Structures are given as C-alpha cells and as structure tokens.
Image (cartoon, rainbow, N blue to C red; front, side, top):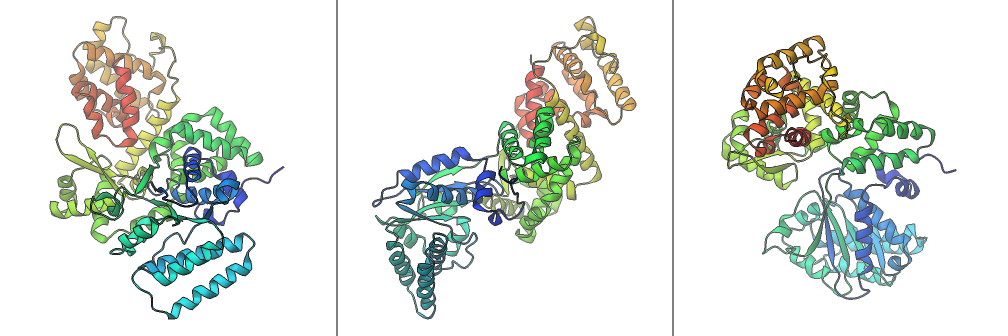
Length: 524
C-alpha cells in the first residue's frame, strides 16, 4: 500500500516526483492538450510556441513541471525533446547571454537527473569559462555553447519558462533577437507562463505579436473542486476517509467557500488541510483558517506593488463592489488621472480587472483575484464589512444547501414568518408592511440564524408582490430594514427584478452567482 500523499503549501518543488504526480489533479485536460501539441512538434522545422496565462495561484508553475514530467514519461516525446525548467524567476536575465546561461544551467540539471553526471560536470566547466569572456548583444557565445551541448542529446530543447514577463522585461530591446532564435528550424520550443497578457504579445508592432498560441487558465468550477478534493482524500489514507465522508455529507460547505475565494488550484491543498483538521462544518471558521494559511502569499503580493498602487488597491479591495476611478479618487483623495494610471498598471500586472457597470455607461474595476480580495476584506475591512461578510458566508452555505428540486413547502411551515404565505395571492402582494414586520421579528427572535428554513415561502411572497406591482415598495421597505444586509443576494435579485437584470453586473462576484440564481427563481 502506498504511503499517504505528501502535501506542500508554499513549496511544491520540494515534493518528490511520485508525490507530485499523485497530487497533480486539477488541469488534467490542459496537460493532455499541451502534451498532444508537443507530439506534433517535428524533429526539425518550425515549432508552435505556447503561452499559458492565469492569475497567481491558477496552477501555472505546477503545470509546467508536470509537462516536463509528461515528456520524460513518454517514449515518443522524450525521444525528440529535452524538457528544461530554468530558474522560476530569471531576474538575472538582463541580456541574452544571461538567458542562454540559464538554459545551460537547466540543461546541466537534466544531465544530472538522467544519470549523466560526467556531462553535467563538463558542461558546468564550459559554462564557467564564459564568465571572463565578452559576448555580443545576441549572446552568441552562450547560445552556441548551449546549442553544442544540446546536439549531444540529439533532441530539441523544450524550455518551460515560468514568469515569462520577467524574462521579456529584462530583455527589453532584444526581443527580436530572441524571436529569431526561437524561429530556427532546429531551435528550442517554448511553453511560457505569465499572470497577464504581455505587452510584447499585444501590440501589432511588438516582437511576439501573434507568436504564441494562448491557453488561459480560469478558476476551477465547484464540481471540479469537489472532484479534486475527493481525489486528494483517496490518497491520504485514514485521514482522507473523514474528508471523503464530509464531501458526501456537506458539499454546500465547499460550494460556499468556492463562491468566496474562487477556484484557485493553489487553494486546493489549503482547503483540503482545513477540512482534514476540522470536519464540524462551520464555513466562516473554514474561511478564516484558509485565509490564515494564505497570509504569507497574500502579503508578499501586496509588497510587490508600488506605494501609490497599494493605496488605490486598498480602496478598491475595501469597496468590495466594482468601483470607478472617480469613486476611488474620492476615497483616496488622489487625482482621478493618478488613480487611472495606477489602475492601468495594476490591470497590466493582473491584479485588477475592468468590468462594465450597468446603467452608467462607464467602466468599473474590481480585484481580479477574489481569494486576495476576500483575504484583504477580512484582514483590513471594518467591523461592519466583516459582519456583512459573515452574513454572506451564512447565506451562501444555506443557499447551496437547498435542494434545487425540493418541493415547495405548504403554509404549515409558516411559523417563523407568519405573514409570508397567504391563502390568496392577491392578499400577499398588498401586505408589504406586515411582511417586513414579520421578517424583522424573525431576526429579532433568531439573531444568528437567517430564515433559510422558510426560504421558499419568502420567495413565494416576493413573487406575489412582484406580480401585483408591489416590487418597488417591497424593495424600499426591505432596504430600510435590517434583513436587507443579511439577505444581500436576495435583495440584489429583487433589485434586478425591479430595475432590470443588468443591475446584477454591479455586484461583487461573491454575491453575483447566488443573486443571479435567485433572480431566475423569482421569475418562475
């Protein structure tokens, strides 16, 4: 019986190849696609280069390592390709000489890992001899040494370049030289990874315009998260059996967390460890523990931002909802032009994304990484914001826990909200004040419990109110009462029914999904 799967939070590189293979569960479809494309690469001739784009935490680094292992595992691919993974962050690659030196180091590692220690040592000696020699702008000496040693393998090099934006930024002014090298008939094949679209690939006059085939890594869907967690649990022995039972018993716990932190593969390990440590089922406690595990990563991302960019990011993250540059300028007391400049830089870095705001004709912005957004809200938000977040957590847990095909309860369940269901629909639609009073009383009697046990009755009442032209009045009265903030997704769905579906575009993603589902249910 194999030993339980080893897990790593912050340094997957330390995992053995066996544990890494067993733990690489997400992105199998992308892996298979890219390995199939590599199968089409000829021994000589033009090769198609690829670029994988995804926010931090989407699994780019792990995917590159797994591609390299997949090439090694395939007799057909390993016969024509040498998978090389240079250092992850090539800050030293300020010219092409350094770039090819990094390739030489990676080739030496490949020799070493494939039992060719003598070649690895000789290559290292040859590379060290370059240190005292002048090289041209093309890095010709280092490049020729790389090619000479590569010819001994009788294969093409597959460069798996993480953080490609760092490489191209360091090689600014020499991009066309690199492109020419990559277009040689027996040249290297590149699969790069970056967190955002690159300037060097976006402009028609840029060196790498229309050069890479693009693969975008988006968030994992809830069903994928559940499947991945189940696979990890299967590899974790006795401790994993408890998590597997939890996934069967309470999938709503996972779905609510997915809405709040997004579908980042990086969080899978964190989430799994949280579930393995405590299967009692408090989603807010799950969220707090998950965010705590991610604190080092989140802080390091903030520290890379320029001071004024951090000011703008702070205002945007605490706004929670999408915000315009003018709104953020008012919050930060900066000029709108300065805020717009910082938003543009944050957007290019993949930290912020532009969205369309309904009813304004203007663009808004929101934090691109919703995990980071939630982390920031918990660690830097006001007491009121954290309380609202807790309400959203509780709402989402109950919302996902409701069976979609459950029969509608009858009036026998009206004990908590006695005025919500009436025998005659016409009476329901006109008794808005009595209904709001009932909801207030319900929250006063049960301050820590939302009336989810009677949620279908509440939806039925709102449908009747809308059918009798009382939607605006109900919205106004609900907005002036405490339950509006406790039932935020439902309140937003009612707003959309009154003001139009486009209103949902102005919500934060954490609330938007549930609100859209409820919007559709209110129209049934």
